[in-house]
Length: 289
Length: 289
Image (cartoon, rainbow over all chains, first blue to last red; front, top):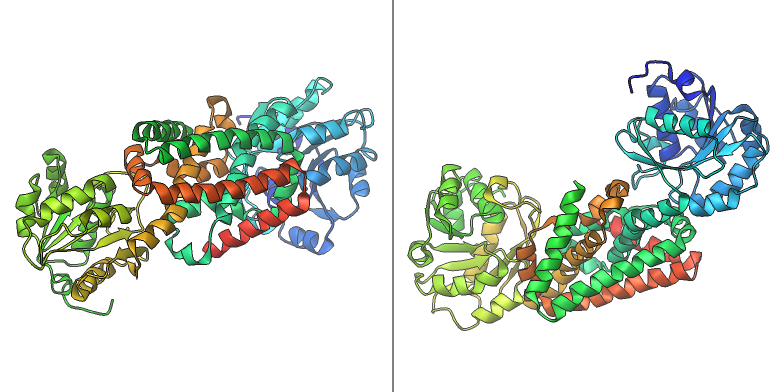
């Protein structure tokens, strides 16, 4: 970013509402503060004790448990709630929002949310889906990190009705936090994330499920790495996997086919085929780094 | 270790042969040097240029490409070669070994090696399988680490004919390198490792194989962690998986059943079942740390 204007001007926002001040919401707040955002950050949630703690930690300037009350004050609102609560929250907030307000989210699934919102927002209020690809298996604003987003990809999912200036504003928002913004349809996002994020979660969880206490001491770092994401929050992941059930199911079928090829090579003691499969896997994995 | 005797005395070895001076062999050499072993370490391999480099790096005191020549000099020999070359090497070395010589290995599979050696060693020469659960997806003695083994588990697989004093000697050897030694049958080892190491490798490789270049930018840290071990050497892993093919195939069947339970819950949109599966997986994974 070579643009030296203060973040408030740059973001065209003076009051930013963050709904759900957990790891992601808290990290967005911390990132805005660190980058000199000089408007107000309003924390919105269901637990006033937690919100008070987030204010004490310096992440939010004020907080409320009343979403409609906050919505009337904010010109930019970011939903960082579990994916199954985003659409309802956006509809509730948008009803009280002023024209020109931009609403976005940070959910891992986009299609179901965008479909649910289609045609249900008042004129002048814009929702554009976002998915910042950053996170951790940790939860809670205590783990908030002002640089969580730096260098990571953020997908935004405008549709044909999205005002270009709001898309530009949203893009600039995530770029200010250090992200590389990629735009695609909600459906393309969900198909891709089914493969790159939701499938790995199921693969890791199913592997973790095979553990038995008597084998724990023989599970070395390879097992630990391969199952790390299985420590993610079961409730959040239930919502994500079900919100993208069709695409996840498809990616599981593709994965099972791959697994069957490996299994056949092993059962048939076919060293050439097995080595080719392992080489191809290694090549793709090495390309990722 | 509170025993302050020099490592040479402690290990009852004055000439230790390391066959295959790669990551593991090199790390054993480095660990012995760091812990004051004052006998000679003889590097044995097929590539004299690489062995010369390992000597220059200070890992081995001398080297040879002639296994039988080296075997005649060593009272302890450790095979750190790929699993499909261990048994043949042990038979070759043992034929020239003096009575009292202890031979072991560092292979990830034990049953096939022990079966192949059964009854084929000269009297007075003992082979006991070892599997130090330490390593990395890196290869080569350049990555050797004198503390690679510290705090890690080493499985040793004696059988009914194993002389107790040689088992004691082998146990002491790995303990000197900082390892926690566990003794079990070769079959129990292979069944456990199929689940904790060989299965995760196949799971990770099959997942890496689903990557396509257009999705790479959307693969976040979760995907990278879950597939990290797929970068392991395809040739080494082909040998490991085929040497333990039956147990790996069984563990793949168990895994596929787990995966099917997740898939069914997703396809049926059964939030309760899916959440239970994810909770159970998380509990087992969290217990690992």
